[in-house]
Length: 231
Image (tube, rainbow, N blue to C red; front, side, top):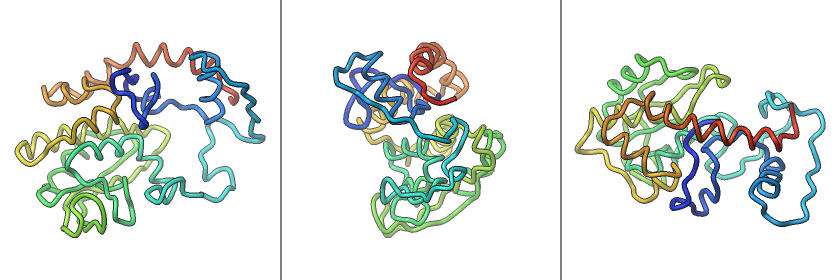
């Protein structure tokens, strides 16, 4: 579980209920949450998977990865996505229109070497950063050479994508205060609140921002455990 609980004013087709960015539930468990905790009325039947355990990643199931989106070509993309999707709410490229969307972030004006060194010095758990250059064929900065960083997840069990991206945004705002900008209200809708953006603008430390989420996450986790089907 990671991220703030979505607030009602920011609900949209992106997020339609009081969930954190990473909720740690299967689709069937989410349906159980909707019907039992949130009292969505329907005649629900969930058929449990056989042979799956909660600590199993997709590449441990023996199943072929079927992209749920053209921009989600592999498991590594999905591992980064809960955090790097937030980049869509900024003027940075999230890597759409490249071979590794949501695994690299950049812009034509970004200081790639400085950013990689700064983030690596912070020892974000389970990830290292490499300076990179890429030219998107679609979406933001299409056809322009972008400088940035590629995320290399070294330990997905401890990797925290939301925390990692907040650290990245803090660094970018520090180095490029005039070039960086938000895409509003999209960032707040992705985040589920406007408070995180405001805290970043006020230069609040990432650790303090994350600490504010604990109470809401604890309450959600109580509901979450009540609908779990798998150990």
